[in-house]
Image (cartoon, rainbow, N blue to C red):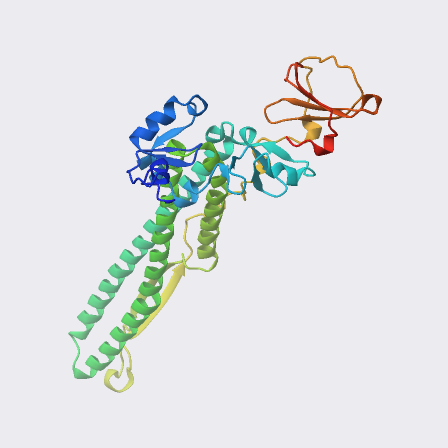
Amino acid sequence: MTTNPKVCSICDQRHITKPSTDWCSECNQALCTECKDFHAVIKALQHHSMIPIENYLSLGSSFSLVEGHCSVHDDKYQLFCQSHDCLLCLTCLEEHMKCEDVVRISKLTKDVKTSENFIEAQKGLSDITLKFSKLQSHLEENLSDIKTQKESALREITQIREKMNNHLNQIENALKTELCELVDDQCHNNIHMTLQEVIKEKANVEHFQQQMVDLCKYGSDLQAFFCLRKIFAKTASADQYMQTLADDGRLYRVIFTCNIVKQIPEFFSNVKSLGSIQLQKIPSQIKMESAKDKEAQLASLGIKSINDIKLNLVHTINLTGEFTGCCILPDEKIVLCDSKYNSDCIQILHPHGELILKSPRHPAIIRM
């Protein structure tokens, strides 16, 4: 079977190649026009989220690869284990029975795109992009000023040169060489290299920013939920990079002066140089305000401590028996272990108490 989302997954299973037109986030499949229509009339699939395949392809690969089905048990993910940081289907749950912080995915992903964390991630990308724009302008302005200063110094040196004889030609050329080497090698090249790095980092952040826009429009809640950590990590990395630039002195504003010797007694015998070139680095006025250290901890997306949970009585179920165990299934059905009169049995009830199934089996051999 092909993994190319541009090809209809259903048709491909029948060894037919058709271009896909839509993507089902629930089934994690690409569909052609005919299969989409068939998909829409199946009652169990009518509420699945469908997006045009172009919108799905516009998502970054790290976003679109977040799947909603368990590849081991071929079942839909319904739970999330915060201890192991992994998605679970109902079969996977058997391996996490001792984990106390297994929660429903629907609770984690509810309103994730309007959550404070999602909005904060968008704002973080915008702030980082703005900071990179300021850095880019700062460095470009510095390069322009250096070029102007260089041209001004060269003109001044040349004007002095024109008034002197062949002996002055040598020291003129020496001073020009010193100027060019110092400005080009130590100033221009270093700042230009920093500028190229800043432009590259800015482009990376803008790419993530566009992916965030596409994710908000076309991505699923699960994709949005999982991508927050990557976005927070990127903003933290970019923030650290800018702070490193400031700490390393690579944002210092570089200026220099060309000091021409004004008095030249016994010029031909004593003067060996027209002047000297000096560099001065002025600290940048751009403030590097580090963003707060944020991590997309899954537990921080609204999951309260058990000590903070307040219980409200919804309804009362009257039962007879000696119940030694109780379990609430993901679909809110109730499973009870009845040990009355040493005759173990399992009872499964509707959420409001109606009996669905009563099985005279020991709980240990009943598998839901």
